[in-house]
Amino acid sequence: MSELEELEKTIAGQIETAADEQEIEAVRVATLGKKGSVSQMLKTLGSMSPEERQVMGPAINGLKARVTEALTERRDALRNAAIDARLQREKVDVTLPVRRAPAERGRIHPISQVIDEITAIFADMGFSIAEGPDIETDYYNFTALNFPEGHPAREMHDTFFFPPDEKGERKLLRTHTSPVQIHTMEAQEPPIRIVIPGKTYRQDSDATHSPMFHQLEAGDRQDGQCRQHEMGPPGVLQGVLRSAAAEHALPTVLLPLHRAEPGSGHPVRPLAAGRSALRRGQ
Image 1: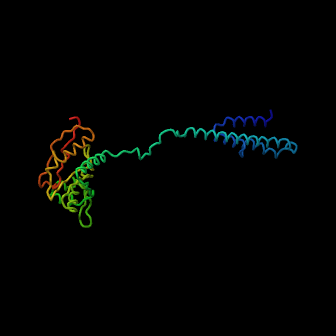
Image 2: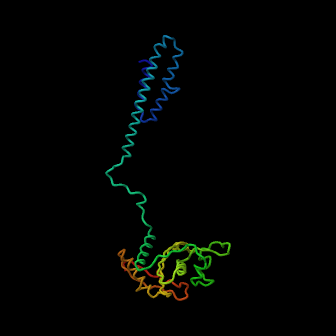
Image 3: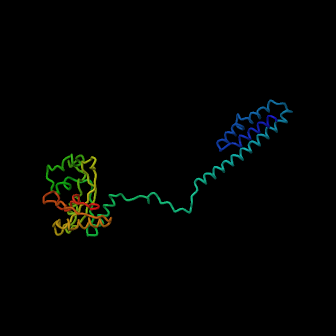
């Protein structure tokens, strides 16, 4: 077997065993590249006699042509095989149900759900939803609600105060939702029947407290009088609690409510819902 035949057999074996396009490219460089085996043989033609060139020239060029054709065919076969494998791997079964978009898989936050449910119950009872700013003035958060000077709630250790503005007034993050009652009473005349959900902020941060938490309070003023006596059981609050329990099939026990005393700093704050409870299984 001549040298050319041996070389062609070796190259054919390398082409046949190439597993992907990267390997077939490596075979091409090793044979037809600048320093490849076939290219090196072509360079020897210059040192041959005319008679040798007449024989070896067509033989080496024929080898080059056959190697080039074999490389092209193998590269095309590997490329088609890779495409087929990818199509098989990434195919979509059109008979499956349509996948829901990520936004459709989301769920409403439990706090938002509870607020929506409670305010909906109050709305069915004729209450309007009232909202106010999270950043308040000292007047609306304390003074208008009868918190006297020197009250502990006015101290830095209990309330988040902002630095004084150019007028020397310090804004603050509201410590309760009651300022909304003052805003509402300034904006409209009785009768006022409102429920106020919202975020509140206090300087509490430990295992059982959060510096931001939610409150929900309700106020009912008819002809300038606070109808506080109608808000606790057996009144509006009892109806709200029973409606919420019925919505989720919860057995309930209603505990006594704390009633705000006159001059306590809450002129229209008849609901002390934190002192009432829905208890499971009792």
